[in-house]
Image (cartoon, rainbow, N blue to C red; front, side):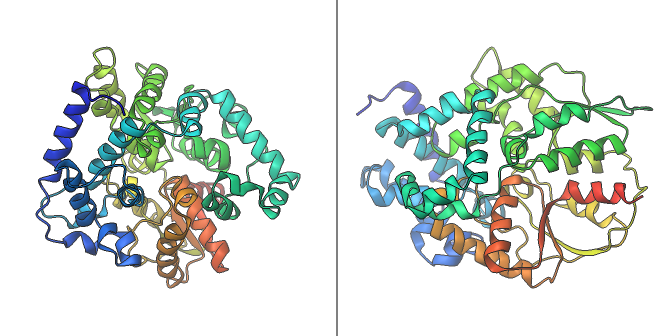
Length: 430
């Protein structure tokens, strides 16, 4: 077992302070997606915080299987603390810190470490990995491997979840965008476009739509050489890997002569806005991190903050919208995407019930907790289907992946689409 350091003691002290804010009222039950579908007390904020309190008081060991499961099944969506908790108990932060301590005590699987420390910081390796998946899909090797049960070596949840994964395109966004770049006559704005891993590898069409929409609004686009935003390692307790990724991105974006840094990924945007806090203790990067965080904007924030080009054609359809957790709660961006959608001529907007409830995607959650992820998704898809919408829009590639799997699973006549793609269609229809 690892020996505690002063940094570990600082982490545990901060954790204890966060935990003590919980008064056990139970209001968090009204917002927790996992509690809504299971009814289990240890799968709601109050229950998870109580378990962490027991750990801190020495009544239970952090390594016990039940504790690991309780922490691991938290979606970190923030619905408990940011919406329903009178004391604003930061459950996502509590869970993150507890898992970080678990990694210190137990270490992390070598596969995770390789992904976070070697793959994510190296775009060339990540692109190569994506190419391997693409080849496996087009040749049928992936389907054959699943049929033979070979993918079970990756875990039963991964084995079952792979049918819901989207097709990997033959080209990444970064391979496509250079052919689109051009000067912008009568330029009014200049932005740096942060392309997240999911957009780059899985949804290059979203990146193409982003650039066209920005061009339509007299905005010049730079595409800096960034890597993964750093959020994935934090979910699994590897904050040092997250800080290393953040430093690489800051090196790529700090000092750029731009009006804003924009992204189409709610998760990337949310985490980059936290770089200042993440690297607050780093004397070489603290000020740079704050500067980068201050320039970060979701694309819906940027577009609603300028004089939007309203020269659009009709898009005659009915649409509903799903709020990504990292957009609606962590960035407080909710009205902006709705304003953009409602500005499109011919588009009928239908608000769904529980639009801001987590879809159950939460990054890689379906790969580690497939059944629970599907239960949360079922509630979301039920609400979406009752709108009878043709389009289900959202602002996060991870949500797009989960919602598309739900549409396919339930046989719904509905297309999942990014908000910026609908704007692109409207501008193209002029």
